[in-house]
Image (tube, rainbow, N blue to C red; front, side, top):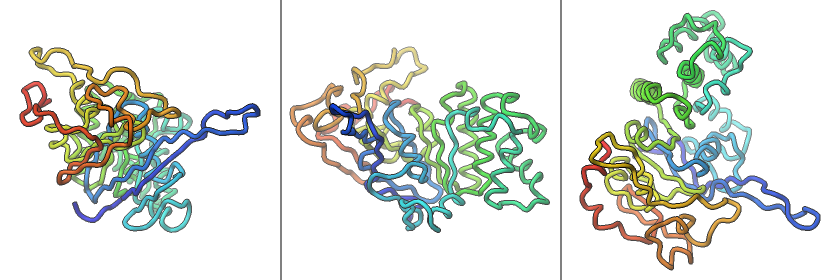
Length: 336
């Protein structure tokens, strides 16, 4: 991979938990993101996947400086943007953008959707006043919206149309990196496919770097060249998407892939090898956080955090060797 556009080194994010003690003077802390390191290069697509509660969105916000870091640092083209304010942060605001999960909640219901996009252009001085209207219309066309919708308010548009407005607003600053935070989760399946196709077109046309946060692995496989699997605030597996899907090394990754529904009736219903629910982030188990749910756990899994193992660009945090069945994928495991 070429030089990193954005790089996270041992990033941690924590939130204040409930007060404890007789007078409530002792505070417990919830470690939402725990020592995550990753990077994304110019024009690259990275999928960040995991169950709800794995803190994918928190990590995405931290990478853009929207959540304060409890530890580690984030570099944007070598500039440390971990401390708020300063030239590095101002540059980050000009060259990155985020598309949020709720297409309606992300827009001001009191103003027209065209004005929401125009506001982003004005704030970042991305268009002169004389060409502002034309620029807004061009952005609407770029994301597949008719410019005649510019004067409508969010409630008059569908969820898919509002999400396209959100993408247009994100593109207004001409970003080099876009973080899409579960931006298709609230949409119908057919609309999800349209939005994913739009991201593919935009990424190809504009050479955008894209971090696509989702719990739907099928969408990530279609869109992203590389994938990182997150569980309870930690990256447990990372690598080229084709390689991770063909030979997942971590039991949690295998469980997620096994749960992808198949159209072929011969494949049967998705299996659920990861039983139970994730533990509370305030009371994590010892050793590997996944070991209470892991069908392949061993005694050493509860004794210490698993080591990071690597084979080329493929890395995973697990003491287990890959099962022999990984040497050849069965038809129902290919998810094609």
